[in-house]
Amino acid sequence: MTAPIPLEKKSMTGARIELKSMGKRLAKKRRGATPLPIRDGLNPTHARVPEGPITAWDFVRELILTQRHRHPEDNDDALRVRFAAGEVVRQDGTALNPDSILATNGTVYFYRIPAPETPVPYNISVLHEDEHLLVVDKPPFMATMPRARHITETATVRLRRATGNNELSPAHRLDRLTSGILVFTKDRSVRGAYQTLFAQRRVSKTYEAIAALADVSPGTLWRSRMEKTPGELQGRIVAGIPNAITEVAAVEAIDKAPYEALHGPLPALAKYTLKPHTGKTHQLRLHMLEARVPIIGDPIYPKIFPAEAEDMRIPMHLTATHISFVDPLSGETREFFSQLPLETHDLLRP
Image 1 (spheres, rainbow, N blue to C red):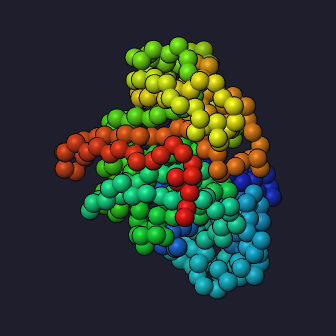
Image 2: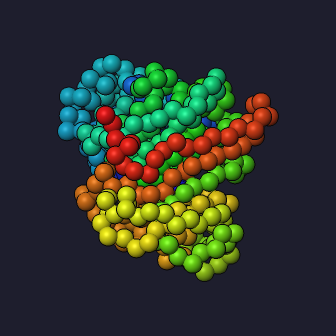
Image 3: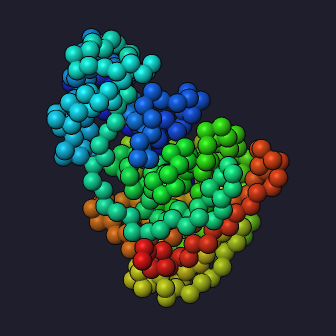
């Protein structure tokens, strides 16, 4: 249900350079504001020098040129403009010149130019808004926050640009392919309270998944030990003490006709209501696979489909439908319900 955030590159010397991108910055909120402001919904990148001395020009240029997903116009001319505008800085905000010398473990902040992305053809619907929270229905194929090749076509950047509020920050995450309820905080002063709430699993969540009808009884608890290696698409279930628990709250047979219109011939289908008691990566998808009822439209389980074969008209049918928690500020019980339909055409932009 969640996805890793870190993005790493290798330098010319073979040392690993950690590119602390926007997602990393959101995860490390306690460090406070960055020396460069959020611009057009995007946090600046910051990178640590693994081995110095090196000039600021050589260091930043290498990072840009070795990006896996680089804008074709992010070249030497664009880098010169950054330096001239004072947009390559140290951690204390001091502007760097191209020939400034960086020492080992020094940190540099600068803006990336996002590479072109395929637009995600879905709307984000607002479910609730108050002084502190913005609660939305995230559509499929939209990452929660920027990572790898998904930068501007993410819920965080889209909403920041739409609202003009650069302090919007997700209190938790949903997989890029998972639809449904996503909670954002609206200002830095309350961000920690809500992110801690989710991190400590003090939130009740319910999901609905569409899969083949099978002999699965409501009340069943799936207990497994799950592991996932960073960089690998699939997680796996291994022997050992369970670290992933999912409750099957209900199983309801449904009409398969709307799904066959998207996916072709299918067996009898059911809607599985799932309540995760833990939050391992891909937990619900792996548990459904282990029960021999993989989620309809899942491009990773049981078989990995190539990224270039992705068709945004055909979603994975997993939706976060309900969420409830005791508000850490008011002490009141908060409860939100998704309004997302399962049919893709109802989600498409007009």
